Image 1 (spheres, rainbow, N blue to C red):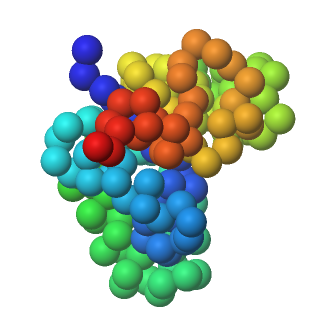
Image 2 (cartoon, rainbow, N blue to C red):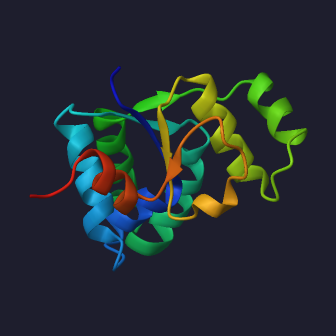
Length: 141
């Protein structure tokens, strides 16, 4: 079965804002997606939040350029009313996390990658940090 990764917003921010100490693992995951070793996914609702945060950190043109790169490398996982309803009725403390989780399930992701796996109390889908995912599936020699 091919590896399908839904990337949480914080991973993308780690890459484009070069946030340490997370940059190396997050960019390695992104590279696996660029090389089509893994299929990378980004939830549709993430684009607006990413644009806002990247524009604040890098400016409008850089934010647009980064989002264009994401569109070239990652597939967009749709958000439908079904995922919104599931998120609203879930036990998640954070609504955005609930949306990410249910979008990941709906699009057939094999993993949800985030820096905050404890924010995801559900267990139907492996929720891992980039570092743990890489150590399990793509360990360095």
